[in-house]
Image 1 (cartoon, helix red, strand yellow):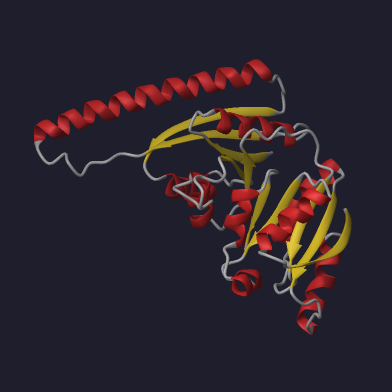
Image 2 (cartoon, one colour):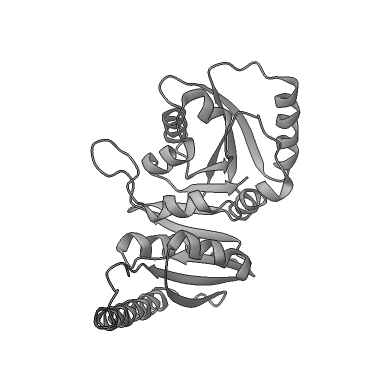
Length: 280
């Protein structure tokens, strides 16, 4: 049985991510854990009186978010009677990225599914997104980011960008391959670069990748960088009418060094389809 964490802020966007996770795992036995993390600020609670007031405020927040969590569970039960899916809920205080990291080994998580609101403002930069904070801190569990208003229907094509610079372990690609096997998806391996002559190591890694994807239908493509890596990947995904993009979250990838751009972050910001980020 899979253990899947569903962080929520009780927004429509977060609820949509929950429903997407349920659709993706429709035929799979799952324990879904809904998590809400609320932060507190105790900098101004130096006196006993202010500490008492703060305690009352935190108690009120706890009651409010607990009620919202109960309402969320009721909503889920109204729209789904899947006997393979089991739900539990947690409401905790603290930093969401830290709490999620703590829960990964505690609940032996297989996947984290979160909603992402996308770009904010004209500069299209990340501004305090919980998804980004979790992504930055966690490198031990796959994260599936669901864009706002995304309506999941099927998983026919998954774009997998790579420059073949890194070795692909079995465990690393297992979530991607399992998802493709379940949905009978086609994995589109997309080599995006400014030059396509592969080194001996890259050729070896490409052969290893072929072996890793042997149980699913897959094909290989090339794309030249005209602007940024992220835009090249998104354009290819749109051309292919892909249903998901999957990336490995390496600490220092060739793509990032080449273009001086945080590829995972930029793709997560602009893509209109789900982004699966696999741990390094």
